Length: 78
Image 1 (cartoon, one colour):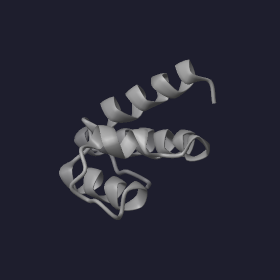
Image 2 (cartoon, one colour; image 1 turned 60 degrees about the horizontal axis):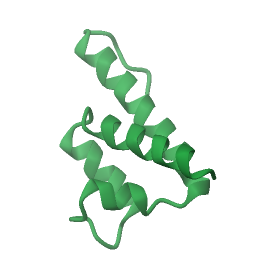
Image 3 (cartoon, helix red, strand yellow; image 1 turned 90 degrees about the horizontal axis):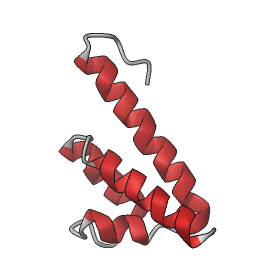
């Protein structure tokens, strides 16, 4: 993965996680840094292998969309 793309995706994931709830961020840590659940989110994100980073972003993005639907009073369909 090109370094500029990596940096961009890291930033997207980090910024997206700021919009997630604490339990959602905890789950993210469990999935990507299960050996250190207290690691700063930046360390968690930079530790994600390139081949998994796009999937991590997709997970965060879907979570944000689900949270927005719930906040708008709509039913979130997972």
